[in-house]
Amino acid sequence: MKEIVVGTRESRLAMWQASWVIDRLKESGAKNSFRIAGIRTHGDNILDTALSKIGDKGLFTKELEHALLRGEIDMAVHSMKDLPTELPESLVIGSICQREYPGDVLISREGLKLEDLPQGALIGTSSLRRCAQLLGYRGDLKMTNLRGNINTRLRKLQEGEFDATVLAYAGIHRMGWDDRITQLIPYEICLPAVGQGSIGLEVREGDQEVLGLVKNIDHAESRQAITAERAFLKELEGGCQVPIGAMAVAQSGCIRLEGVVASLDGKNMVRSSSEGSSGEAWNIGTNLALKLVQLGAGEILTKMRQGFGCNE
Image 1 (cartoon, rainbow, N blue to C red):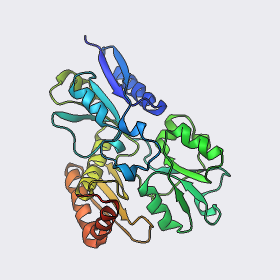
Image 2: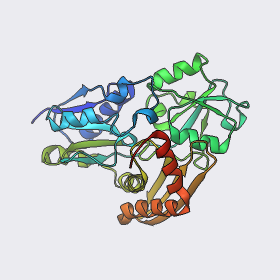
Image 3: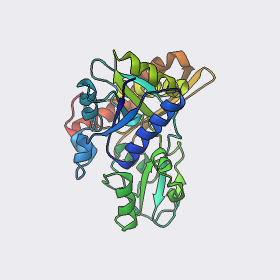
């Protein structure tokens, strides 16, 4: 029985996720031996520039995909929020694992909640999605670019570089740092990134052995929800990062999807929802995107892309 090489980014969180996947595979009955291969991605090498300035498609996935295509690894472990909606030919998402709580959390230096932060408080985040939605809630907040892994961001917070930061709950929880969370940010204020909270396994389309292994840890309702979110993003996205948030819940054969598109300053925001049967996940996402475009999201996105010099 062959050794399975599991590719992942080199960060502490990414390594944790790869180990977690291996544990789930073994629990599901896999008898193979496994080896983790850490791979540094383009996004890991550029830490002094905002993601929106360099484009975010494949920033944290391309090198892993190249290793897959060359046969150097047998599967790539991704945070689903990092995985572009279009995959290279001959690669597929073999498994979408059970989703952790997908929302964002506030971690503030003084333990203050979002509504209690002082006027003009400085928020460290590299996410346009978070910036736009937080400014929509409190236009007085000041946003500053913050890159690096979770450890780096929390260290900079403690050193006083800003008043608070916003991170995904899933990453903080997986690192065992729940005690640092000041507040779970309500979805009414900030919808998460597409796919946030779930781990995806990308494999070669023709590798039946690995496909057979990973399908055992695929979580149907997480896959349905994230499929709707990815369809929503695919219909809207252009050539660079834009402030788009989405949250789908699949339950009892139904999906409810909520999505938002916002201007950078949060002053223009288009938000709506849609629902339908789980078997129509892709159509639900596409239709909600078209609905938001009709409500004005298209104009917001066009201005955004012109501002960043991005093309569709």
